[in-house]
Amino acid sequence: MKTETIHGGDIYRNQVMLDFSVNVNPLGPPEEVRRALHEAVAHCGEYPDIHGEKLKAALSRELSVKKEYLVCGNGASELFMGIMHGLRPEKTLIPVPSFSGYRYAAEAVESQVIEIALREENGFSLAEEPFRALAALTGEKESILFLANPNNPTGRLVGKKELQSLIDYCKKKGVWLVVDECFLEFCRDGASALPFLEAYDRLIVVRAFTKIYAVPGVRLGYLACGNRDFIQKVTKQLPEWNLSVFAQEAGVCCLKQRAYRKKTAGYVEKERDFLTEGLRRLGIKTYESDANFILLSSGLPLRRELLKRGILIRECGNFKGLSQDYYRVAVKKRSENEKLLKALGDLFEENRAAFAGGN
Image (cartoon, rainbow, N blue to C red):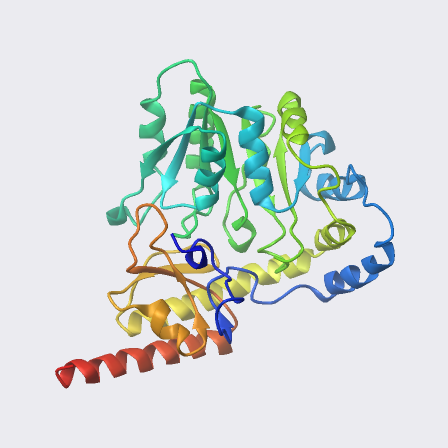
């Protein structure tokens, strides 16, 4: 497998003017967060708080979650790995297509991966398939289910009623449930699993600052779980001082940006509709999305051809359940979305001319 296609954002090995392969906030980092990062330079000569108390207190206030339920990490990816090393489940259930980091963490502890195939004819909906997989589970060993809400790369949300039913069913089966909400704050109508933490102590909610605040270079995420024994287990799997002074200061500042988050949800919804309509006018098959990205399919090698024009999109052939005919594009600012649509239009026109000429 080529490392350049494992994740988006490979601007280091490609000549890129516009990066549609990563799904960060098109509004860019809040100015207050930029200032906080600059001010953190003054603390570079000090060790960061090993417990991240200031950040945890801010998270507790903003989320209405007890401070002792929180663990912060160097991005969500570090936390997925910490979860798996802390629990070491025999079986790991993963919907496909979905984020590759879940499988990566499961394989690190030699957990048996059980794929839950999401059906294209249902728009890759997450509504029913996990229940079928959970019902088939047997044995007394630990099992864990990963669920991205909204899912990546499909962008589909799980509704509040379906989410509650799934949590109740996992509780009945004794299965750990990890709900990845890294993109939830982009969704105007997204329902969080955080209110269910007290009802089920095997529920783990994971979020990151990366996408919603457009700070992937800062590396900051957190998880919440009402099981204190689990909190101790996962904390022991993480390095000491895993959060830099930059991450902690930026995180506290990010949590104050309520107006920014509200503006983001409305902006993304408007631009997602604009981009989806433009793609469909070009004859490109797109799939319903609730997030800040769109899954599409085309028989043309879109990534390769757009890269010639300085535009990078995410080829999805390495997502389980998808082929190289699937692509994911981020929702960006209007001017950038227009450039993508223009480049695609030119690409299709060139191909029509080539086909007409018998080439």
